Amino acid sequence: MKNRLNNRLGLGGWLGGGRYGVDRYAYAFHRLTGLGILAYFIMHIFVTGMRVGGQEEWERTMAFFNAPVFKAGEFLVFLAFIFHAVNGIRLVIVELACGIGRPHVPAYPYTNSTMRQRPFVVAVMILAALLMITGGVDFYFMLN
Amino acid sequence: MRESRLWFWHILSAIVIVFLLGAHMGTMHMNTILNSLGLGSADPVGSVEVFRRSASPVFLVAYIVLLGSALFHGLYGLRSMLFELSLSKSVEKTIGGLCAFAGFALFGYGTYVAIVVYRMHGVQP
Image (cartoon, rainbow over all chains, first blue to last red; front, top):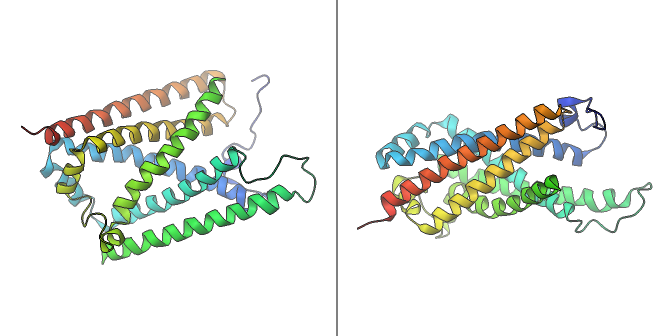
């Protein structure tokens, strides 16, 4: 463990945003949604694998997953995907240092984080909310 | 250097996923709206539609690319999260090996299914 950072906070360090604000909670939520999507994706590979059994097998599988509880779960996965994708695009843009200003000494009042990155987070959350509402409307019409 | 390269692939796979999974989600979960606009299908998970798509070489390639990208992105993300827990080198190595094994196994199974279904319905006499 020599020369390695010691993460004393463990799992709490992932989830707790502390006083770091909305960006830090977006980070924690990005990870949570990522884990949820990964778990669903692995199950999805096996469910879509049912196609090997032919059309009848597929129809039987889809009839089973047509129950409301699975539809609700599917909608949760959809919401998680929208958040993870839209926030992920923001992270890639920030990673490539686009739209966040030139690097400078981080001196208060931290203009880059408060004047550039924070509005970016808010804009991204609004876009995610709009996409979630659109998907929600679709699910509503599908169920009715 | 190796980690930088893996991180680069993680970002590149994210971009691929946004396009392919975005199209998938739009087709599957916004189909009522798309259908009312004259786009998309009324029943995208119905067997007729599913097997019609499975018979298309474009969908076959897109499916395999999406499968590989999503597995790499997801499992590398999981590995990165676990590595932040200050684990010993041997545990990290085991986790890396398990993630790689799971990734290759799932990719092999998913690709096998895609090719079998493509050949069942795509190669008609």
